[in-house]
Image (tube, rainbow, N blue to C red; front, top):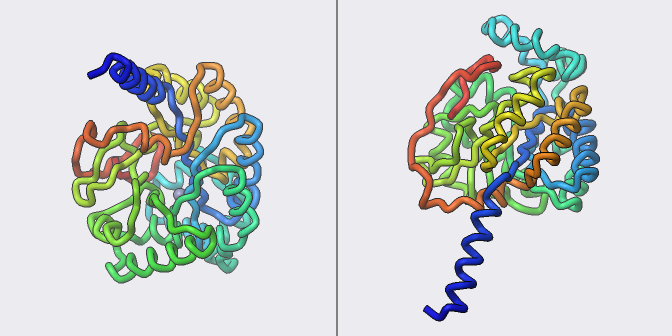
Length: 305
Ligand SMILES: [Zn+2]
């Protein structure tokens, strides 16, 4: 090999490996109407201030958040989480009634102008849900046809709304099952972000790369210890993904989120989109395995890991 070429290759190799150090992806899940209406614009403002790009995973269809009230009866851990995080304060009284006493408004479908703003400011948009609440509460009792319709409606509306089919799926509440993975093969996803695994891997069933949210979020570790806990996890200088909720980090905890980003900047982490992170990871280095379900600290129901 001519030494000049070897030199270029070496440089490229070095460049890639240094690019893959100290990288933070921010995955913003938009789960509710109020999160889309108020949380997303607030987050866009924050991202502009820090000159960083994020990946927005959008719920497209009905906001049936109020149906969570049914979980209070079924799951004592859920009640504990609601009290700890002051859920009504976080999400607002109206959100707590959508889908029960109040009709469900459409989430992303109600705000095409916000979608255009996310796009024009250079952020990534991907598919999170058609009906988020029903997926997280009822997936296990729903039929295969229901899952098929849920994807059909969601992806069709997503494509109409954004002008493109999504290239990634992030499951609501990090909840998946084997039937879901079967459906994913019908869509041409480039990657998934459906788990809370500690490292990226390849889903055994679909061969799709999983870019997981490995860091804890404010809702799980609490807002007081949140910043130190999250930044402690960044000490290894590797690639990480932080899960964020438009309703929370773009809502009453937005000042804490700004403080967190200031800390991230101080330690020289580069913030980028999940699709860019996917490009930084050579798939041949990833383990091929099946997801498993695990109850993580601070959560009320098991997540895929
Ligand atoms: Zn969500």
